Amino acid sequence: MVRGERVSDPSDVSGPPTSPVEVPAVVGRLASGRPITPVWRNELGGLTFRLGDGSHAQYVKWVANGTPEIDFPAEVERLAWARGWITAPAVIEQGADAEGSWLLSSAAPGRSAVDPRWLARPAIAAAAIGRGLRLLHDALPVAGCPFDWSVERRLARSTTRADLDEPPAVDRLVVCHGDACAPNTLLNDDGTFAAHVDLGALGVADRWADLAVAAWSTEWNYGLGYDGIVYSAYGIDPDGERIAYYRRLWAVT
Image (cartoon, rainbow, N blue to C red):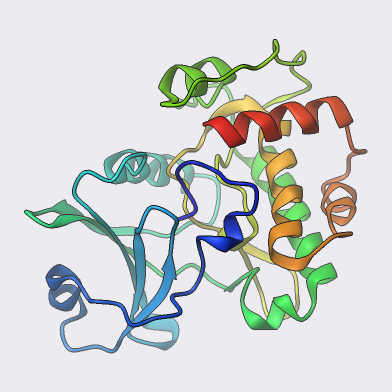
């Protein structure tokens, strides 16, 4: 889960936990005796745990009650819709109790683009991010998509004051991922794109809303010089105006 208010370098506040994690009671229940491994903590304090190991592992995302910007019912809807066209996790259970909310899903194939295997091979990972995003945009149909991620909707939902210019003209409307940062792209062991995860903000928008942030996230995770690989693998030349606008928009929404 890489969501919430953005800072200049989100890698400072989200990533694999580096200190002991208290396991919520519901996560213990869902594990049913299987090993519980904390795999991610986002900047809002949301946690992701792997339950079990191997091909039968499951993942549970958990957030404390009152956490803003995390809407698991919305993610359930988007996953159910998107799975008609793409590989995505299957929802097993979604619920809430007095402590927090959770979403239990099956494991998608592949390893995150920020797995140590791919942090050591950033050019391969960046290419998979670009190629995977193009496959997503080409596969999901705009016509009939019930979800909106437009500039207007994002600004209307923002809790911060947004002093932005008028957005650039739409290049191409697609169904965007909505959180296309590197951790949400999974790769096969041969370096090819495998799947996307964390589709809770999925919706129709200009493709640059995804592209600008996907390429930007390579700086946070791999360092400078890999953003161009994302654009090349996607099959597009960088558009400086749209990149700058959608990165500013990301920072305030």
